[in-house]
Picture 1 (cartoon, each protein chain N blue to C red):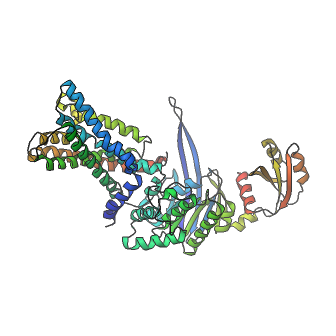
Picture 2 (picture 1 turned 90 degrees about the horizontal axis):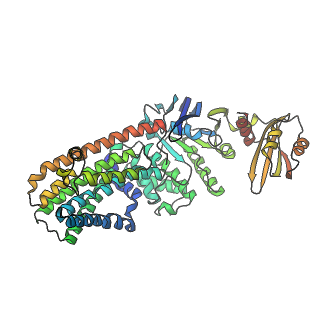
Picture 3 (picture 1 turned 120 degrees about the vertical axis):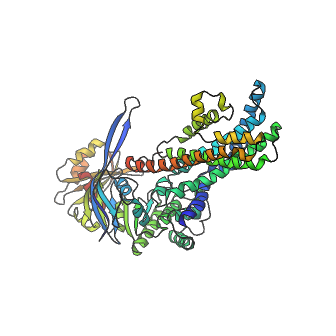
Length: 322
Length: 261
């Protein structure tokens, strides 16, 4: 049975420009998103910045009313029964803001325990248990203004679990964390699924979705462009190959020219310290290394390598295809 | 039981979380020194122009200054959440909004009463104003009622914070408005008729009048009518504030305005 269901969800934002002659501009952030999450499943909503992930999650947690479509959580409609939905869900978002800086970590949790109606007798034990879970034991009585970004992020997780919700929404929970902090947080998320929680995770980190999620929906420009297990998504591009070229200063026009080559499925460039890494995904039946290097005349070229496609390649291909 | 705890425990915790004036370096100049300056300014203007007595300005300004903690601290209960990016965490909680927000008003009211009482006492000492000893308990009640009614206006102001980003500007405007319209420094009877009409539906107007009557030696029983009116005005603003919070929360969900800084 589906615990979270979204049917053709749409959300339009209206923005205004100008002071005297005000113009209204409509932006369709989510354009007909549908999915269902089963009990105990960790479902990932994967997409680039501005794809509509956070808007979708905000509609599901009752913070935004959909412009069209319906959604329900544990059988309760997010528009008609917001209070029933709120009682049963936990919400964790990324970033270091969103905690009361003047209060200690413990008092932050105690306040939210009151908001969620956690009985006083249960509160203390529950807070202790969560502090242990997120690794804040021993620092709980310090003001959060002195916490690191990672500690604040872990406090967000503890806050989202105070009332032992059946469904947890995690909105880019590892954003901005250092690698160690992010790994620890992913381990914590893993323990939640073991405890039987149903989780919706939004992220733009492919490896995170690959490592944690049972199923993934790739969202781009407000629409779901693919859905399946990580293995199913990988298999969509498994037949191709990826050529990676370390390059210094590649013009946008060159990237566009490479995209138009026969046999090229997708092209993307990542910044890595001083250099850029150009990745060209091609069909398996073509050999384009020479042609690619030929287009890079005028740029400093470093290491060239070939590899099998990963989930990241599948993701880029899907997003670029849009 | 939960609503009861949310009202008291939650109200106090959120006050500690959001009320930056709790720092002595901000609290003392803003809420201890500034109201005394206001009292002295108007009292000396009054003296030099031969207008009203010192007690007139002490009562008017000490009670009117409750508007600073009431307006700013109450608006902080919403705009402070928005600034710290905690507003959405509050609004996705299932907490009943009545104890959630009215509980936040309780410490504000206590602080406002303290500010009024302290500045009243300080103004009397500095200007050499003596009050009938029997009027003190009655004045304490007046100060509490004034703090309550002004907190009601503060809650309405807080609700506006769900739609207006720069609420501090609005709070300053309302403070100035109250300074003129409540009769703190100009007798209501000397204001134009339309201003008098407005005065009668504002918090503080009736409390200031009640305080002046008590300071003039009238018995407490003579000012109960004024206090009942003041209380009624406070309840009306409180109810209006809660209704506005509900409307703006719904509109915020509909128009996606809740988290804009």
